[in-house]
Length: 452
Image 1 (cartoon, rainbow, N blue to C red):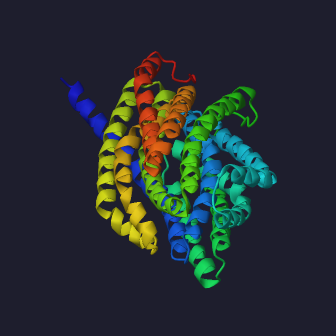
Image 2 (cartoon, rainbow, N blue to C red; image 1 turned 90 degrees about the horizontal axis):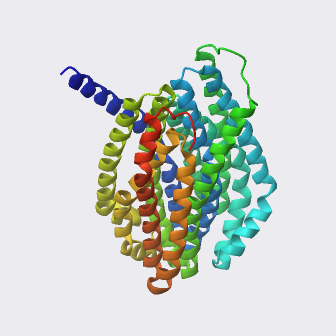
Image 3 (cartoon, rainbow, N blue to C red; image 1 turned 30 degrees about the horizontal axis):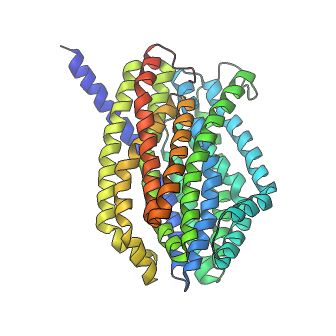
């Protein structure tokens, strides 16, 4: 009879820890797409729709690149949480070092390959000449922020693994505040247009990296002493890190490819559909980043349970995260339905763009309830470092997306694009949910430290 109050108390503790992590993460994450919303709004009040399309396509390229290498954030949180749960502070220290080394290599490579990347992108994307010209100028400026942005992902992932959402919140608030202020100054004050939006991002990202390194140094000094020397280049751990990041990279490559194709296919329909879909895509990004707060909380709590080999803590973390994520997703969709028309008029003063965006607002309102399961299960699998399952599920969903898009876009135009996006998110969530019983069995069999 005494187990029930104990279990109830444990459940309440998990709920509290989820909100202690998810609350600040949701708030900080939402500032990222809100920045995109500000970027769009800044150029949305310039006289032509192609300014919106140019920033949309330029930002889409960076979303593609940065999200692809966001594997560093995802691949750092789970192992850090597991090392913390196991009390291995030597490995906790080594993980941030390895992640920053890899981030530096990736960022430098992107700068070196900037021209081939932009040429390949605009060979594939069929947009108007004005949109392509401005988007290319945007890209060639903003690409210099790549090393700082990717290193910041590693820092944020490490702090999430330590169950610290406060530092990432401070970092993202400061970076985005700097970015927004410079956006307004460069575009409306100096008249730099699209180039000003890109330059603001570069300055903001390096400011965030410098601040992030300061926070890392302080946290390293406060951790318990290591049991032995820090092995940054330990062969076994490096192979594990590269394996996890490889799986997440291919998983994320499929996800960002869907987002990229969403805007690329919109561009084929013309500047007005592209501008309208770019505005609505910002709402989707808000949903994605916001609900990812629960995914990040799941990564941390599940990772710690796996590291400690605590099956009860694992189950409680999964159950509580899914419940709260579902509730917030429903509220999110309701807000879009009620407030969406007003937000559209705030973002752009171009009436044809407003009318077209409102026509497809229902898709956006339904999307949180559709997408929440994919996002939340991602966090669960990342915390358990079961990255191959994530990779394989998303690859199958991506292939299905291509098939649906190929069939429906010629028949229904823009509605076909939205339907394909919706199907992709449904398939991701369903695939991960179907595999979950096997994941649970593997954890209860004390195989938690292995990557499936």
